[in-house]
Structure formats: C-alpha cells, structure tokens
Image (cartoon, rainbow, N blue to C red; front, side):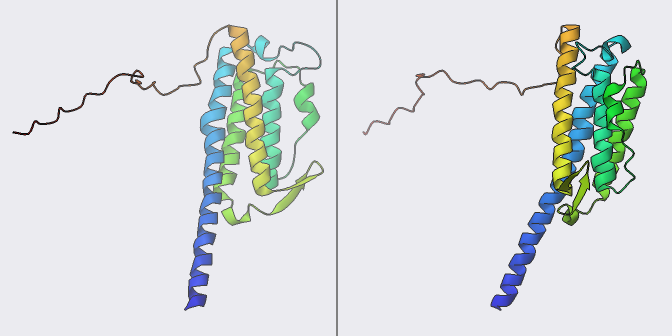
Length: 199
C-alpha cells in the first residue's frame, strides 16, 4: 500500500514536471512569434532601406545586420541544435553585410525562420529538454539553448525598437498598460450604518 502511494506520488510529480516543460515550450513559441517578431517587422515597415542599413560607426551594427544575426542565431540553435537540421550558418556574414537588402526580404527571412523554429518547438518532446548538444564550441541542454535564444532575440528586438523610435522621433505604442484603477482618497470617512436606539 505504502509502495503504491509512493509510486503514485512520483508519477504525479513527473507529470507536473512534464507539464511545466510543455508550458515552457509554448511560452517560447508565443514570445518569439506573437510578441517579438511583430515588433521587428513593424520597425522594418516604418524604416527606409537606407535607415535599415545605416551604422553610427564601424563598431556598431545596422538594423539589417541585427535581423540577419537573429535569423542565423535562431536557425543554428533551435532549428539545427534542437531540431537536428544541418548547421549552415555563416555568422561573420551576418555582420559584414552592408546591404541594402530590401526590407521586405529581411522581414520574410525572419518570419520564415521563426515559423520553422516554432515547428521544431511543437515537435520536440518535453522530456528531451535536458539532452545536451554542442554548437560553436559550447555545450548546453536543449532547454538552455531555447531560453538563451529567446533572451537573445528580446535583447536585439529592444535595440531595433530603440533605433526606430530615435530615427522617427515618436512612440511606436508597443506597450499597452491596463487602465489605472480609481483609488479612494486616504482619510476619507467610510459611511457606517447608525446603530439602532433601544426602545
């Protein structure tokens, strides 16, 4: 009886762990496809091709370079590393490109890459996220690689959004806060029912 309870307990814990891993994969897909990608695509649509390939100096990257870099990073670590596709990345070219590659082509490239990565994340078994692999001389587990890709994508998305806002001089309205709740003024007396007089 006690052994059966322990076994059932282990099965329940294992299910919660698996459910948590599945939720992690779902959230990674959501952040890449529904949150971060649309912001970059919107920025590309607002900027001119000249703006997209403008660099403030030789030590900095253009928006175009960052889009190529993100596509290469997602492909190498998720599509190849997690999904098992061939690693065909040429990282140096992502930064040496001077363009002007048309912005429609850049947007299409990033959309296709994120879509393919999403397909990988749908297929990968949650219980395999602890399996290690190596790329660029680094070894990490699948879950580490996915988490780093999402973090890396968010980091460069922020750079692209900042550049776009600086170039255009206006808010892009990517952040929508919930309406503020009305707060009762401090010290305001609450109405209380008057006690009934005894007769």
